Length: 381
Image (cartoon, rainbow, N blue to C red; front, side):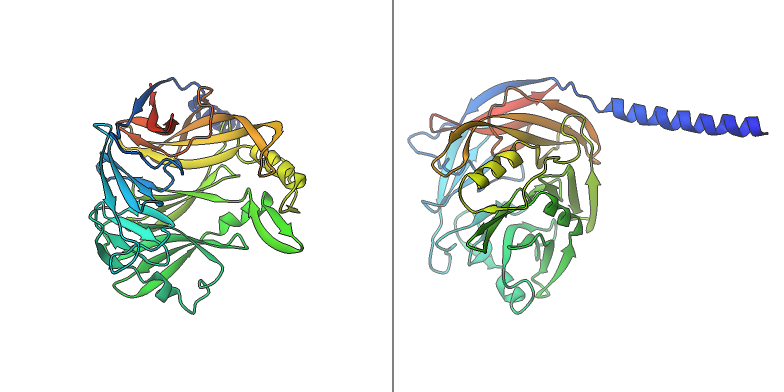
C-alpha cells in the first residue's frame, strides 16, 4: 500500500511539473511579422500632428479616424480605407453648442457621436451640435470627489445611453477608482481599485521648497477594447479588466519571458523638481521596462501590448533631462481571455510607439513622415 501511495504522489508531482513546462513552452518568443507603410492624402490641407494623434479615436466600423485639432477647434475625419482626408468639422468654442476654450480630450461614443470633457462635458454630433450635456460636476458637488481629482477619459457603457464611466485619480495620492454615472437617475457609484496602491513601490515624488510638485513612474494606462476597460499598470505586468456589459471587475498578472513581471531597480522615493538628481531618476526609471496599453484585434481575436525600455545618451535637453537615443520595444500577444501566448522583441521599431490601433488584422502605428500623416503597419504571420 505504501508503495502505491508513493507512486501516486510521484505521478502527481511529475504531472504537475509536466503541466507547468507545457504552459511555459506555450509562450512563444518567436513572432514572425512584416511591415509596410501607408500615407494619408490630405490634399491641400494640413493635418494636426502636433500631439501625435493623442486626441483621436476610431469609428465603430474601423473605417474612419477622427483627430481633434485643439488649436483650430475642428475634427479631422480621415478615411482609413481610402487613406485620405474626408472633412474638417468645425466646432464652436462658445455659445449653446460650444465645447469650451480648451477641450482636454475627445472620444467617440458607440454610435460615433463625439464626447468632449472640459469645464463643459457632453455629447455632440458630427456636425458640431450639442446633443446632451453630462452634469458630472453637479453630481460630484459636495462629495469626496470634488477636489484634487483628475478626470480621465469618459466612456459610454455599451447599450446604455444614460450610463458613462470615467477613471478618477486624486492628484497627490495613488487613489484610483472608477466612477459610473447614471444620468437617468442623477446618481453615480464608485468602484475601488485597491491593487493600484502597489504603484507606490516605484513612485518618485518631486518636491520644490518643501512643496509637492507632482510624481512620475507610477501610473496606469487605460484603453477601451472589446467592450472592456483595460487599466494596465506601467511598472507591473498587471492590469484591471472591467467588463462593461457584464458589470464585472477582475485583476490579471503575467510573467513575460522577455518583459518579466515588474520593474526591479531601486529608485529614490523623492527628488527635487528640477536639476540633475531628477534627470538621473527619470533616466533610471525609464531604462526599466514600462508596460503599455492593450489593443484588440477583432479579426484574429487577440490582444496586443507594447512595452518599452528607453536608451539614453549623456546629452541633456533644454528641459534638464537626458536625451533618449533609442528604445527596446517588446510586443506581447494575449488570447481573448488574456492568457499570454507570445512575446517578442521588435528591433525595427526605433521610437516609443505613439497612437496605435488594429484594423484589418494589422497593427497601425502613427508616424509623422515629413509633417505628413503616415502609418507603419505590422502584419503578424
